[in-house]
Image 1 (cartoon, rainbow, N blue to C red):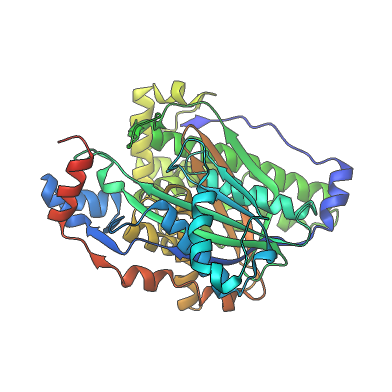
Image 2 (cartoon, helix red, strand yellow; image 1 turned 135 degrees about the vertical axis):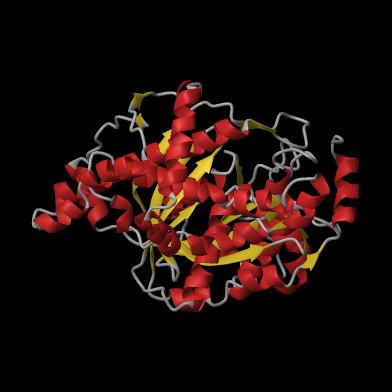
Length: 467
């Protein structure tokens, strides 16, 4: 077990005065784009001579989106933006910024946004009559967390008043491609998300006042210049994801609790107990959406957070006794130093696996996380777009179940290799229903065509090193 001591963060009185009257900014609408074809995970497993359950159960993926027939990260980004523009009847002058995030850059200098704008103008030029050359165009790179940072920056751009009344569009588009026969091959995928960001959004009010942040140099994943596929230390990357997100979560929690204590002088004791440092803070969220490189890691993320929250309570003592968990506390500041302790890593993994069988874990996972996994289970890894495709998945499925309610709190756990994590939250806005029923992610997934595994294998072997 690992104990991280987190410094307490307190707002100054001036900051509190400013944010008490904050205006609402967030996601007004979401559009998605996915490749037209996919491969079946069981067929891939059989082709590689491994048990299908290793992919479908161990990793949690069933279908893997594959770019074919002239599709690219550029076309996915453009398709998502065009869909967003048409759904909302946007005029070019309504838009002041298009912020793209990707780790699948097609050029070392020219940003993805320029490539995407070229395609958009070809499709919409005659209809709209003029170009988008007035918009701010940017590309953000920080592995998979780049999309969350782009959303954060664009919300701040609007809050600052520098947007001159215009809207922002945040676009996350990626292709996750790995060498054939590598451990990463079943975690491939591709997809894009475009989000309309504005004040008084219809879908989701985002609150970054308590943003939890973690950033540290780490060698878990990289793609050097000129290389088509990444270099990955899978075990280190998995632990880095958990370590970074838990630390960011702690920092979010500290800010949140301190803000309540500092500002709500009439706060009743029962409410303070509910958000206190010795209670399960994750119960403050109705839903949790994680960056999902593969679905099974979300179980480990929730187990990691739940254990961290329960430690020191009577319930945790009971769990350790019942499940025979050795609760070892280890101090450590650098991810790679902690990870180098093999004995600790084995104990840590074993403890997380045992927590999967806890009734309280199963309830939390089913009700707060599971519905977000439809997208990554049927698309695969989409890097920067992953967390927002998971959000779209959760919204559509929970809407179909009639479980969504205005004011629902959605917690976000973002991660990017290299490495960094952000923890923040949003609240469902009043007009969420009109937006959610038109996202259309599930239909786009269902309308795809399966790519014969032999055709996939032939194409990939030509582009990648042999097994």
